[in-house]
Image 1 (spheres, rainbow, N blue to C red):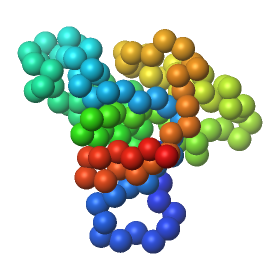
Image 2 (cartoon, helix red, strand yellow; image 1 turned 180 degrees about the horizontal axis):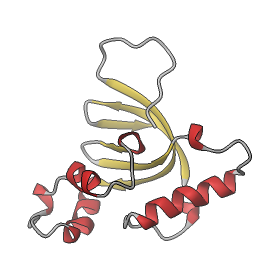
Image 3 (cartoon, rainbow, N blue to C red; image 1 turned 135 degrees about the vertical axis):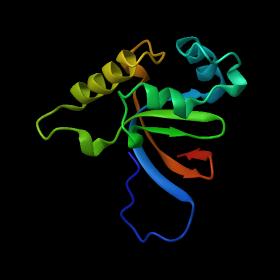
Image 4 (tube, rainbow, N blue to C red; image 1 turned 60 degrees about the vertical axis):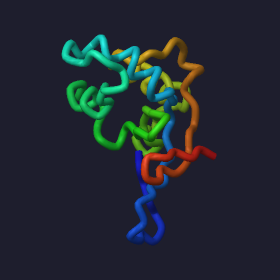
Length: 123
């Protein structure tokens, strides 16, 4: 998901492009904490721990910012003979099967932006 094709400096920012969806980090934590019996408080809920325990997503398929979580697949994971509609359905199915809240494939969109020290800026 995080692909950089230009000069890489010592900067702590990462550019990304993904077909997926975004969540408010605190609302998502509240919804998911029930899946982790030892997590009592959404404020203490560790979203990274949830992704570690749910291996459906590789490290580069989710971005966690201070206030936002973006989940999806990089366009480079789209098969050569796959249509965009088929790819978006694949992304939707992966998110849904992981137990993340999503209702319709129409929620899958192209998201591009920069993650700088936990602050996600989306174009």
